[in-house]
Image (spheres, rainbow, N blue to C red):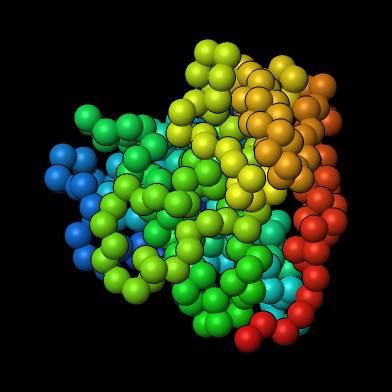
Amino acid sequence: MTVHRFLVAIALSLICAATGLADEKRPVFKVWPGKVPGEIGDIGEESALPPRGTKPVIRLSNVTQPTVTVYQPPQKNRNGAAVVVCPGGGYNILAWDLEGTEVAEWLNSIGVTAFVLKYRVPRRKNREKHEAPLQDAQRTLSLVRSQAEKFGIDPKRIGILGFSAGGHLSATTSTNFDKRPYKSIDKADEVSCRPDFAVLIYPAYLIAGDSLAPEIRVTKQSPPTFFAHAYNDGITPENSIRMFLALRKAGVKSALHVYASGGHGFGLRPTDSPSSTWPVSCEAWMKSLDLLKKETTK
Protein backbone atom coordinates (compact mmCIF):
# COMPACT_ATOMS: atom_id res chain seq x y z
CA MET A 1 0.00 0.00 0.00
CA THR A 2 1.37 3.44 -0.95
CA VAL A 3 1.76 6.15 1.65
CA HIS A 4 -0.99 8.15 -0.09
CA ARG A 5 -3.47 5.28 0.05
CA PHE A 6 -2.49 4.57 3.65
CA LEU A 7 -3.27 8.17 4.65
CA VAL A 8 -6.59 8.04 2.80
CA ALA A 9 -7.50 4.84 4.64
CA ILE A 10 -6.64 6.46 7.97
CA ALA A 11 -8.68 9.54 7.10
CA LEU A 12 -11.71 7.46 6.16
CA SER A 13 -11.55 5.52 9.42
CA LEU A 14 -11.20 8.75 11.37
CA ILE A 15 -14.24 10.17 9.62
CA CYS A 16 -16.35 7.27 10.80
CA ALA A 17 -15.25 7.92 14.36
CA ALA A 18 -15.52 11.70 14.09
CA THR A 19 -19.03 11.66 12.67
CA GLY A 20 -20.27 9.17 15.20
CA LEU A 21 -20.76 6.38 12.64
CA ALA A 22 -18.34 4.16 14.53
CA ASP A 23 -18.91 5.52 18.03
CA GLU A 24 -22.24 4.98 19.73
CA LYS A 25 -21.19 7.44 22.44
CA ARG A 26 -21.56 10.31 19.98
CA PRO A 27 -25.24 10.76 19.12
CA VAL A 28 -25.93 12.08 15.63
CA PHE A 29 -29.23 13.61 14.56
CA LYS A 30 -30.53 15.00 11.27
CA VAL A 31 -31.17 18.72 10.97
CA TRP A 32 -34.20 18.23 8.72
CA PRO A 33 -36.84 15.54 9.36
CA GLY A 34 -37.79 15.16 5.70
CA LYS A 35 -36.82 16.85 2.47
CA VAL A 36 -33.98 19.29 2.90
CA PRO A 37 -35.15 22.73 1.70
CA GLY A 38 -33.92 23.78 -1.71
CA GLU A 39 -32.16 20.51 -2.54
CA ILE A 40 -32.74 19.33 -6.12
CA GLY A 41 -30.47 16.30 -6.26
CA ASP A 42 -27.67 17.84 -8.31
CA ILE A 43 -24.91 17.22 -5.75
CA GLY A 44 -22.84 14.03 -5.83
CA GLU A 45 -22.44 11.49 -3.06
CA GLU A 46 -20.92 12.69 0.20
CA SER A 47 -17.23 11.88 0.32
CA ALA A 48 -13.93 12.42 2.13
CA LEU A 49 -11.22 14.10 0.09
CA PRO A 50 -7.65 12.72 0.19
CA PRO A 51 -5.51 14.31 2.92
CA ARG A 52 -2.99 16.99 1.99
CA GLY A 53 0.16 18.34 3.62
CA THR A 54 2.19 17.14 6.56
CA LYS A 55 -0.72 17.50 8.99
CA PRO A 56 -3.67 15.84 7.25
CA VAL A 57 -7.11 17.31 7.79
CA ILE A 58 -10.34 15.38 7.35
CA ARG A 59 -12.18 17.21 4.56
CA LEU A 60 -15.81 16.37 3.86
CA SER A 61 -17.43 17.25 0.56
CA ASN A 62 -20.84 16.96 -1.12
CA VAL A 63 -22.89 17.23 2.05
CA THR A 64 -26.59 17.10 1.18
CA GLN A 65 -28.01 15.70 4.44
CA PRO A 66 -26.97 18.03 7.28
CA THR A 67 -26.39 16.35 10.64
CA VAL A 68 -25.29 17.29 14.14
CA THR A 69 -22.86 15.23 16.22
CA VAL A 70 -23.26 15.69 19.98
CA TYR A 71 -20.21 15.88 22.23
CA GLN A 72 -21.02 15.95 25.94
CA PRO A 73 -18.58 16.29 28.84
CA PRO A 74 -18.78 13.78 31.71
CA GLN A 75 -21.92 14.49 33.73
CA LYS A 76 -19.95 15.75 36.74
CA ASN A 77 -18.12 18.33 34.59
CA ARG A 78 -21.06 19.81 32.66
CA ASN A 79 -21.81 23.43 33.38
CA GLY A 80 -24.94 23.80 31.23
CA ALA A 81 -23.38 25.90 28.45
CA ALA A 82 -23.55 24.69 24.85
CA VAL A 83 -21.98 25.65 21.54
CA VAL A 84 -22.88 24.83 17.94
CA VAL A 85 -19.57 24.36 16.08
CA CYS A 86 -19.29 25.30 12.39
CA PRO A 87 -16.11 24.04 10.64
CA GLY A 88 -14.67 26.15 7.83
CA GLY A 89 -13.71 25.25 4.28
CA GLY A 90 -14.68 28.10 1.96
CA TYR A 91 -18.25 26.81 1.73
CA ASN A 92 -16.82 24.08 -0.49
CA ILE A 93 -15.63 21.49 2.03
CA LEU A 94 -15.69 21.05 5.81
CA ALA A 95 -12.43 20.82 7.77
CA TRP A 96 -14.12 18.27 9.97
CA ASP A 97 -11.50 17.46 12.59
CA LEU A 98 -9.31 20.60 12.58
CA GLU A 99 -12.23 22.97 13.01
CA GLY A 100 -14.93 20.60 14.23
CA THR A 101 -14.39 17.53 16.36
CA GLU A 102 -11.12 18.73 17.90
CA VAL A 103 -12.89 21.93 18.93
CA ALA A 104 -15.75 19.93 20.43
CA GLU A 105 -13.27 18.02 22.59
CA TRP A 106 -11.76 21.29 23.82
CA LEU A 107 -15.21 22.64 24.67
CA ASN A 108 -15.92 19.43 26.59
CA SER A 109 -12.71 20.00 28.57
CA ILE A 110 -14.16 23.27 29.91
CA GLY A 111 -17.54 21.71 30.68
CA VAL A 112 -19.39 22.84 27.53
CA THR A 113 -21.62 20.56 25.47
CA ALA A 114 -20.75 20.81 21.76
CA PHE A 115 -22.90 20.24 18.70
CA VAL A 116 -20.75 19.86 15.58
CA LEU A 117 -22.77 20.91 12.55
CA LYS A 118 -22.18 19.16 9.26
CA TYR A 119 -23.78 21.81 7.08
CA ARG A 120 -24.31 21.67 3.33
CA VAL A 121 -21.33 22.11 1.02
CA PRO A 122 -20.26 22.90 -1.67
CA ARG A 123 -21.94 26.12 -2.71
CA ARG A 124 -25.25 25.57 -4.47
CA LYS A 125 -25.80 26.96 -7.96
CA ASN A 126 -27.96 30.06 -8.22
CA ARG A 127 -27.96 30.55 -4.44
CA GLU A 128 -25.94 32.79 -2.15
CA LYS A 129 -22.89 30.92 -0.85
CA HIS A 130 -24.24 30.92 2.68
CA GLU A 131 -27.98 30.49 2.09
CA ALA A 132 -28.22 26.70 2.50
CA PRO A 133 -25.72 26.62 5.42
CA LEU A 134 -27.64 29.44 7.14
CA GLN A 135 -30.82 27.39 6.93
CA ASP A 136 -28.94 24.49 8.54
CA ALA A 137 -27.44 26.65 11.29
CA GLN A 138 -30.67 28.42 12.20
CA ARG A 139 -32.57 25.16 12.30
CA THR A 140 -29.84 23.61 14.48
CA LEU A 141 -29.97 26.47 17.02
CA SER A 142 -33.73 26.05 17.31
CA LEU A 143 -33.51 22.28 17.60
CA VAL A 144 -30.83 22.40 20.29
CA ARG A 145 -32.70 25.06 22.28
CA SER A 146 -36.01 23.20 21.96
CA GLN A 147 -34.36 20.08 23.42
CA ALA A 148 -32.31 21.83 26.10
CA GLU A 149 -33.74 19.71 28.89
CA LYS A 150 -32.91 16.50 27.01
CA PHE A 151 -29.28 17.56 26.60
CA GLY A 152 -28.99 19.01 30.10
CA ILE A 153 -28.12 22.50 28.89
CA ASP A 154 -29.28 26.03 29.68
CA PRO A 155 -31.43 27.38 26.81
CA LYS A 156 -30.09 30.87 27.62
CA ARG A 157 -26.43 29.85 27.24
CA ILE A 158 -26.28 28.44 23.72
CA GLY A 159 -23.58 29.91 21.52
CA ILE A 160 -22.15 29.41 18.05
CA LEU A 161 -18.47 29.06 17.09
CA GLY A 162 -17.03 29.02 13.60
CA PHE A 163 -13.78 29.16 11.65
CA SER A 164 -13.16 30.96 8.34
CA ALA A 165 -16.29 30.31 6.23
CA GLY A 166 -17.77 28.75 9.36
CA GLY A 167 -16.98 32.05 11.07
CA HIS A 168 -18.94 33.86 8.40
CA LEU A 169 -21.79 31.39 8.88
CA SER A 170 -21.69 31.98 12.64
CA ALA A 171 -21.68 35.76 12.14
CA THR A 172 -24.57 35.56 9.68
CA THR A 173 -26.53 33.35 12.06
CA SER A 174 -25.84 35.84 14.89
CA THR A 175 -27.14 38.80 12.89
CA ASN A 176 -30.10 37.28 11.02
CA PHE A 177 -32.03 35.50 13.76
CA ASP A 178 -35.03 37.74 13.07
CA LYS A 179 -35.67 36.18 9.67
CA ARG A 180 -35.30 32.68 8.25
CA PRO A 181 -34.68 31.79 4.60
CA TYR A 182 -37.05 28.81 4.84
CA LYS A 183 -40.64 28.12 5.78
CA SER A 184 -41.34 26.82 9.28
CA ILE A 185 -41.85 23.06 9.27
CA ASP A 186 -42.63 22.21 12.90
CA LYS A 187 -42.76 23.53 16.46
CA ALA A 188 -38.96 23.57 16.74
CA ASP A 189 -38.91 26.44 14.26
CA GLU A 190 -41.04 28.47 16.66
CA VAL A 191 -38.11 28.46 19.10
CA SER A 192 -35.53 31.26 18.84
CA CYS A 193 -32.47 30.65 16.65
CA ARG A 194 -30.54 33.56 18.19
CA PRO A 195 -27.18 32.49 19.64
CA ASP A 196 -26.59 33.84 23.14
CA PHE A 197 -22.93 34.41 22.26
CA ALA A 198 -20.62 33.89 19.30
CA VAL A 199 -16.97 32.96 18.80
CA LEU A 200 -15.48 33.86 15.41
CA ILE A 201 -12.03 32.49 14.62
CA TYR A 202 -10.35 34.01 11.53
CA PRO A 203 -13.80 34.66 9.97
CA ALA A 204 -13.96 35.24 6.21
CA TYR A 205 -16.32 37.18 3.93
CA LEU A 206 -17.44 39.66 6.60
CA ILE A 207 -16.51 42.71 4.54
CA ALA A 208 -17.43 44.01 1.11
CA GLY A 209 -15.21 46.88 0.03
CA ASP A 210 -14.98 49.35 2.89
CA SER A 211 -18.08 48.10 4.69
CA LEU A 212 -19.50 45.03 6.33
CA ALA A 213 -21.07 42.55 3.92
CA PRO A 214 -24.83 43.18 3.60
CA GLU A 215 -25.74 39.93 5.35
CA ILE A 216 -23.83 40.96 8.48
CA ARG A 217 -26.64 42.98 10.07
CA VAL A 218 -25.21 44.14 13.39
CA THR A 219 -27.70 45.66 15.84
CA LYS A 220 -27.91 46.16 19.59
CA GLN A 221 -29.65 42.76 19.74
CA SER A 222 -26.59 40.99 18.29
CA PRO A 223 -24.96 38.62 20.79
CA PRO A 224 -21.61 39.30 22.51
CA THR A 225 -18.84 38.07 20.23
CA PHE A 226 -15.23 36.92 20.64
CA PHE A 227 -12.87 37.40 17.68
CA ALA A 228 -9.46 35.83 17.05
CA HIS A 229 -7.42 36.62 13.95
CA ALA A 230 -3.75 36.68 12.95
CA TYR A 231 -2.11 39.82 11.60
CA ASN A 232 -0.54 37.83 8.74
CA ASP A 233 -3.71 35.99 7.74
CA GLY A 234 -4.38 36.07 3.99
CA ILE A 235 -8.01 36.52 4.99
CA THR A 236 -7.44 40.00 6.35
CA PRO A 237 -8.07 40.61 10.07
CA GLU A 238 -10.09 43.60 8.93
CA ASN A 239 -12.98 41.11 8.73
CA SER A 240 -12.92 40.75 12.50
CA ILE A 241 -12.00 44.37 13.18
CA ARG A 242 -14.88 45.89 11.22
CA MET A 243 -17.50 43.67 12.80
CA PHE A 244 -16.04 44.26 16.24
CA LEU A 245 -16.25 48.02 15.73
CA ALA A 246 -19.86 47.72 14.53
CA LEU A 247 -20.72 45.72 17.65
CA ARG A 248 -18.97 48.28 19.83
CA LYS A 249 -20.94 51.09 18.18
CA ALA A 250 -24.14 49.14 18.86
CA GLY A 251 -23.19 48.73 22.52
CA VAL A 252 -22.62 44.97 22.35
CA LYS A 253 -19.77 43.96 24.66
CA SER A 254 -17.30 41.91 22.63
CA ALA A 255 -13.60 41.00 22.56
CA LEU A 256 -11.09 41.32 19.73
CA HIS A 257 -7.71 39.54 19.57
CA VAL A 258 -5.39 40.15 16.61
CA TYR A 259 -2.20 38.11 17.05
CA ALA A 260 1.19 39.04 15.59
CA SER A 261 1.38 35.79 13.61
CA GLY A 262 -0.43 32.55 12.96
CA GLY A 263 -1.63 32.75 9.39
CA HIS A 264 -4.91 31.08 8.48
CA GLY A 265 -6.42 27.75 9.45
CA PHE A 266 -4.56 27.14 12.70
CA GLY A 267 -7.58 25.69 14.50
CA LEU A 268 -6.63 24.46 17.96
CA ARG A 269 -3.41 22.73 17.00
CA PRO A 270 -0.46 24.16 18.94
CA THR A 271 2.23 26.09 17.08
CA ASP A 272 4.95 28.57 17.99
CA SER A 273 2.68 31.44 16.94
CA PRO A 274 0.85 33.51 19.53
CA SER A 275 -2.45 32.70 17.81
CA SER A 276 -2.28 29.32 19.57
CA THR A 277 -3.29 31.03 22.80
CA TRP A 278 -6.77 31.98 21.61
CA PRO A 279 -8.56 29.11 23.47
CA VAL A 280 -7.19 30.38 26.80
CA SER A 281 -8.37 33.91 26.04
CA CYS A 282 -11.72 32.62 24.83
CA GLU A 283 -12.29 30.60 27.99
CA ALA A 284 -11.48 33.65 30.11
CA TRP A 285 -13.93 35.73 28.06
CA MET A 286 -16.66 33.13 28.48
CA LYS A 287 -16.04 33.10 32.23
CA SER A 288 -16.28 36.89 32.33
CA LEU A 289 -19.80 36.62 30.89
CA ASP A 290 -20.78 33.92 33.42
CA LEU A 291 -21.25 31.46 30.56
CA LEU A 292 -19.30 28.72 32.30
CA LYS A 293 -20.97 28.94 35.68
CA LYS A 294 -22.19 25.55 36.81
CA GLU A 295 -25.84 25.40 37.75
CA THR A 296 -28.71 22.96 37.67
CA THR A 297 -30.74 23.25 34.46
CA LYS A 298 -34.47 22.65 34.36
